[in-house]
Image 1 (cartoon, rainbow, N blue to C red):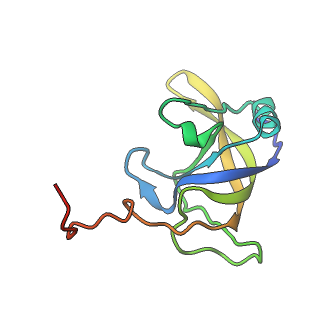
Image 2 (cartoon, helix red, strand yellow):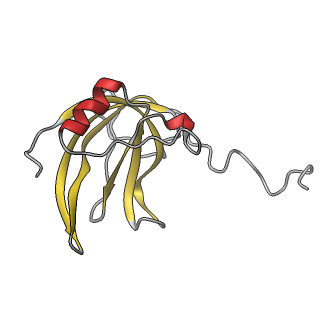
Length: 139
């Protein structure tokens, strides 16, 4: 059971969909990645599951996915101003993470909740890798 504990972590941001619902999950979401061993341990002590897929998601290291079904998530720059543009993969951030209890069809657990996200090094979002349908070398 979640006890209200919060952890401040350094992370890399991947697949940030803070103001647009992810079609697969039906929620706003962001992956907080490349967590240090100490951050991963602190999150696990809160009862959260830390993921790692060294084959399919090697560039993400240890990570958690924060989701919100009901309201968009916000990100801020180091001056406290809200970031309204899309955030690119590999952006650096500090995040304050809590948790919440859930129950679904006889299963229960604790999921991470993003309390605050401060982007310290913003990587410009470039869409689908800068690919254009007009490129002459398209096969």
